Every structure is written in structure tokens, then in C-alpha cells.
Length: 71
Image (tube, rainbow, N blue to C red):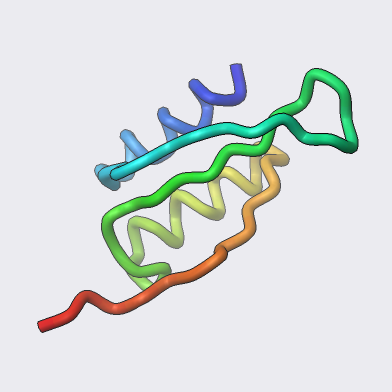
């Protein structure tokens, strides 16, 4: 269910995912960490909204990097 929730939030905000992969969470058995690469900057309203919606669903979000698009 968690993967579906994550994908649904980004789809509803019309945010394109470039890459997604998961790794087992070594602290919790049968728990996974998801790493995603998306199009856009964290300052964009659609991405801010998606992050807030994920947090509202108790999904922990860490932004590892956010870089402006080159001209």
C-alpha cells in the first residue's frame, strides 16, 4: 500500500517521477525506504503540496537534494 500512496500523491499533483527504487529498512523488518527522483524543484507549489500530503499520511519525507534547472 505505501508505494501506491506515494505514487498517487505525485500523480494527483501532476509531478513526473524520473526514477524510483526501494531498499529494505534495516531498522524495521519488512519495512522499506523509497528513493525517488522527480522533475522539478522543491520550491514549486505542486511539489510542496505533494510533500505535505505525504507527511499528512505519516510518510516520512527527507529531501536529499533539490537543484534548479540549468538554462
